Length: 421
Length: 149
Image 1: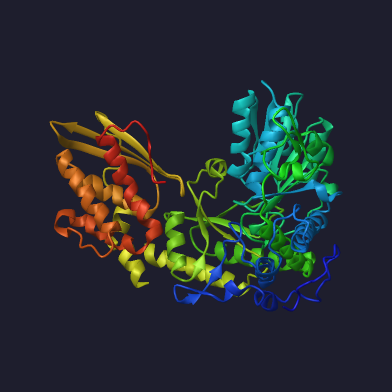
Image 2: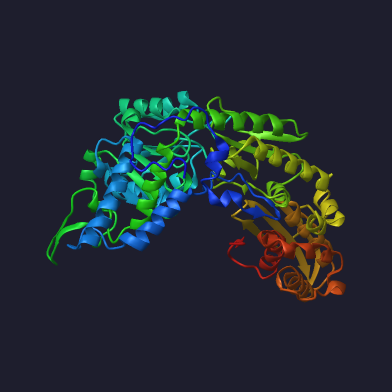
């Protein structure tokens, strides 16, 4: 474990140069084979692999620390509570939230958004009110709003995007009006890689007094997140996409909004006192964490943050942009291949189609070469509709991917042409 | 590549490139829509049945080579057959692509036997089944659109 940081620190210690081979050694799964060939894992936007440090934290929790939190007066419970709350503090620093209680542990970004839609949305929305969502939202930032719109009589309006996959900001400004009561924006598009100018868009929403939820599921694994700088009201993060365990994520919310919101779920942990006449609720963050939470998951996610703190975001960015450039050039040179999503500001995601070949056939054929990519609509059917394609093939890179793996992908895609002629 | 050649046989590539019966059937008296929510494949099957015989059949939509070729081969196979014969073909086809080690009735299936390689690709079985489930829904006038999920 060359760079397992034992003490969390908000200032990452930069390595002189990004050493991808040393980083790969921290991820045991990357040593696996697939179809008898070295696994080339390029589906990181779906889920990321986990460093050994995360697995160690889970193992340590279950072998040495497991007890229910916040309740026991015995030492073991105190230790597990400290580990769980330590993870919260870690996440707080990771996104630069002002207070630890502004970090709510949830199952993932999907639950974070549903929590806001149901708890905040149901109170804040009424007939004729408008929820503004971008055309490139993941279904998880569309459907929860449609559900709450159905319940409240509010309407969903769509911020359109260009052929290149960039949001039309003029149109966004035009759509913002007195009826707008909520804006939902994806920070980084999972389907196209577009990095949206969320800070600017949040400021525009605030000019109209409108709160903004940012879906940060695809941003957190690639770039530092500063919720105070963004000034968003809500920010959703998925743990398993940022090298943590599945089933854990966080919702960031500003204190004044979270305080005013009713609980999302009822149960143990989230109460101050219960009697059949009246129940009073616990303060933040417990109000939104009913029942025994995913303690191990939270600790594992805290370990993922520790791991990331041992790397340098600048070095990660430089490496991922090199992969993106190399992948774009290599794939574009294949006859009949078209890359979708040509935003100026793009994360390391390449979505593409091949003339005369459906994305699923591409996926099956490259899989025979050990290359794992995602094919389909990527839970963004409105994006597919907008670009006029039923599906795309998508390679999404993490910092542990290499130029060699990009070459393996390009080579595997040429096999598709061999099969289809 | 051996498994791939088994999956993407020439007849499949040919039917994918130039699908037969890719059309609306103007006087169809049965039709159904099928989707594969996972990949976004969509297919509509139109059938004209008279006296229990499939007089004409066509399909429209978009999808991968496996679903397009299956739809093309399927419509070619069931045209002129009774609806019972079509259902029997469906059963035989379903068994061919799903039953572990089960010998398929290749005589009954004819050209459709080219899709036997799908069995080696569990993630792709639903691509081959989608047109059949949609045809079945059309013939039984199912109220709900078909979904492979």
